[in-house]
Length: 287
Image (cartoon, rainbow, N blue to C red; front, top):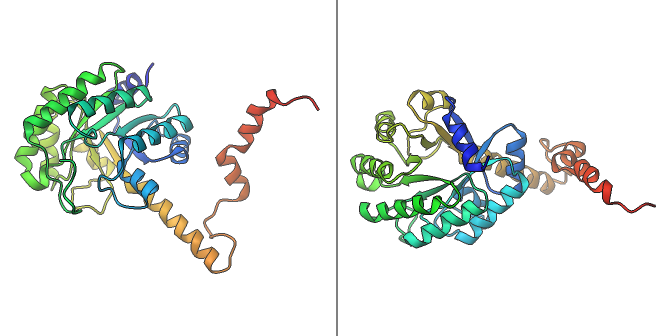
């Protein structure tokens, strides 16, 4: 089965899908080894790892595609929902993005309705006119036929245009054939319910990391509200940052490592030194 087909089969099951965020080969490998079947290649996490900065539309198509290739190379069995952002341009750019992600083995791709280039501020996300976004979703769905990749359509318009407009956009995305829907920044559980209802039985995705001005139910409550997929971008990134800070603080204090560091044996096993030796053995020349 192809990654999109496997992802469809996973979504057809009744369980709530917990989708950790990944950004490189190591995070993908660890996620798969932890038993997760799927992961979100998060634009915010890629921005943090590549740029050391916030997610403010500075990451390019090429950088995201390269990150997808790293993730797929390290964990080829992991089903990846790849962040396609705004498609990196107009409807034709969207088609290029969807086709490239499909060829690279992504199971699904996210396309959203924010305006690019963004205003020179970190506040707010003004969005495209509704009918212009319709064309982007239509272009994405058409391009997805090449590989079978699923299209997740996202609206960011709730903070700037209100919940009624956001719900109308979700209904429009369903009409255009999007496979997964995503209302960003719902204010409360009632808005979550409205978004799920507007999805007309198709799976609805949510960011469930705490700290942002949005409704972030627990995994159990998210399932009760009808959400199907929950991702947690800071769930892995924040502890990773904390671990690196702890390691640097230990070095600055004259120590060799932080208290939470892996043992040398676990470190080498996690990175696969033993597996490398086993795979290389058949190719070693005698003597």
